[in-house]
Image 1 (cartoon, rainbow, N blue to C red):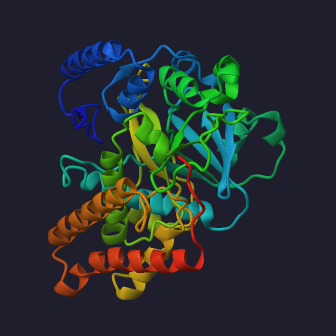
Image 2 (image 1 turned 135 degrees about the vertical axis):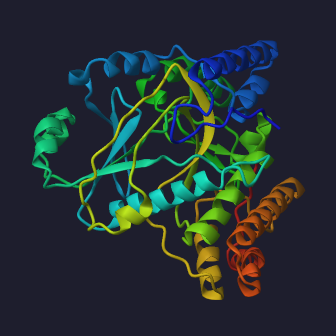
Length: 419
């Protein structure tokens, strides 16, 4: 099992004094860098970097840029990162934040805000319940900017790229940013998985600096041939690729299982269409926010102003992150809720390990996932004092998923995976 970081308190910089925390970080960093220097094999080094949560120092352009911008608020513009079904995402340069700008005035972004807060709160409360594992990180929702907040729009509207300056105002959700994987990891990903003829171009491409790896533990590649155009933006790390670099896939499968159990039995949401990505984070942060119950009492898109901010970019940690809750729906603790959860899990883009896989190793990964889901669910229900009928629901979910998938495969067999 990879070594864990000292527990970080959400209410303060560290649960120990800052000098003590800094010394711990320096010692841990030295151990990691010494271990990495001994890994002459590129593939082994890449797997180690993505499997560990140890603090890694970076002198990347992003770290330097963010540090400089943090001291010059007038330079903190909004840089376009990506677009999705829920909204357009902008980096808040100089802050460890992103802005999600709604595509329209539907309730999707508000649901992302409210459900994200609920999930974050429950993950924080339960983070010590599942040792030696822990839940994934959740990008913490910070506050909502209403379209009627003239003061904010007058001060910040011009920070958007030129193409967005004159567009109609839309609600904005500000939340913690998942920072890209560090430069050394990105270059190793290119060296291992891209075509040799395109590696230097891929390394110099500005777009490849925005690298989050979508971890697909339920899918292998259908072809191992390197793509003609290699991109690290929304890079998909398939199961066979994760196994090739000796990624600790059982650990990540356990984290996904714990995340789903918390969503089902503490948050009571089906976690429909959530994503799991490998990214990094500043090592020190202290964000103020409203609780989920406080936000739930507000009208949608009420403006919620931020508290204080503190962050470091030069030392970052790799983590599994869970994000995008805008499609998540409330789920009853009943057999109807279990059926709803099964459909949501099976349709979730192959992030989770799957039952009824052809390869023995893949089936064992499913068994690891199922075992940890049941274990985590049992701990949650024991803590909550759930009655006997409710305690049977997690097992019904696992068995229901197995039956549902078996029927689906009979009707539509999976294509052959060559990897």
